[in-house]
Length: 282
Image 1 (cartoon, rainbow, N blue to C red):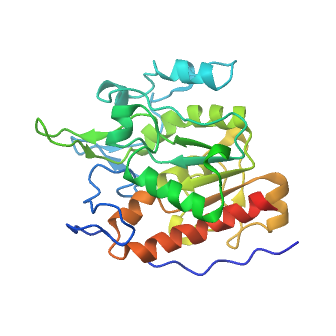
Image 2 (cartoon, rainbow, N blue to C red; image 1 turned 90 degrees about the horizontal axis):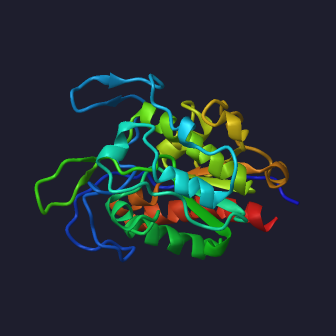
């Protein structure tokens, strides 16, 4: 039995535009086609208009009331709960066993995920798996998904890579019923929230990745995602987290790929993931 201690604050992550491979061994990238490029609570659409939550965006009517993950995946392929389905190649639903002990939630699919139809298959996904393996979280025990199921991007010239664009608040809110349905089926012991969008989708707008990363935060009821205020600046005691389930927030792995000091950013990611691994091992 032990009491949780707050991990040391990891190095700050800043964007860069290097042209050589970083210390993690992954190719350098501007991050333009990677998820979690920037955190926003209010988004601006292509016409410069502010988008607010709700206002008719809702995937709820497309979510089946019965059935497991296969039924959800089949139904999600036809989701038109927000306009993102119009330009994305396909719905990128979660992947992993329904018996998963941990659910990993990212922001949205990236360019490669949209093309291949599976989550976390690009450079950020490979780095994430490396970090999970380092802390002892087995990939076979994890379910990987995103807060938003379609790739949002800026139009690019023919033959050019599509440029990632962060989902708006109402797009995230519209897609929340899919995330809630996945969690309801899986009933995980722990949820990893990668980045600000995932954290806000789970815990609401009060979530701050800079302040609450690496903490054991209360698991919200599945029917109240995004409406549960984050409480406890120091997180839950480890024993309570292991008994009742918890959320652990950290940076999105794409932030590591954009960091000036990739090695320090990667070590910060691993430090946060180790908090989750300790709960699963308890």
